[in-house]
Length: 326
Image (cartoon, rainbow, N blue to C red; front, side, top):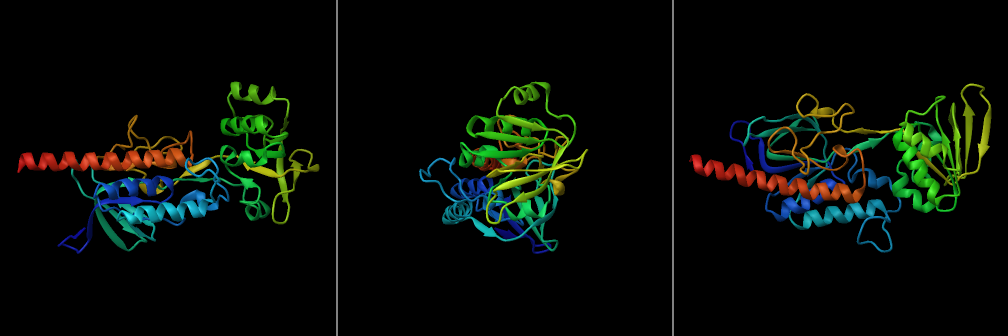
């Protein structure tokens, strides 16, 4: 890294914004390519997996591993190859539109960093209902990812909240492995597509409850029940469950990039097909920040690898052009 003469701003080859499987994998590949990456972890070092107690679906861990341990190991691996991991939050960016241009990022509203390439791995935040008992039991039976955690409730009774396509898909997924799935839909109809609604209504062990919301998640250390309320009649009912899945959507962490990077209507960054390239040269996006379909640790890691390779190739192209024009 070098320091800019004008204002002593730090200049680096590769800036990684955000940690988690995507960011750390990008760091491993970028460091091995001698890009000397610097990572700013964000407010939640390690990302969503730090709130996951058991990870059983990431290749290479036959006995499973808990999320926080996995993130520590990924960080150690990235650091072993020379990544500098810094605790800090990128609060503002000024991204160049020119090939070979320098991108600027402000950390914690005070320190500016200049980078030749930027890899965005800021992820997406699962939306929760905000009920105190729900928040208290996150990791103790309350989950926002049925595909990630549903296996732990095989043969048991569970509940899921939501009425969109994701909720319908996760409900039918759970129905294949669980004894019974109670599905709570806040309105008198689902938002899901007709095809997905048909899948739900034709699955015998899904108990679909319209106009129903959660009044309280029951349990001290782990979920052992649910108190529901009909929002039309105010009638309450308790059921015994061991797992509660919240499927009301995710919010991509892309606010600081609005107006500079192309996004879809929900805020996910748009990348060129089969790449991690954004609409600006030298800026790449990996992980859940650009993936609203899969949102798995292994797919995030894959796109992290892609982002580092894309960044390496971009820098090589820029350097070649500079040599030609020199």
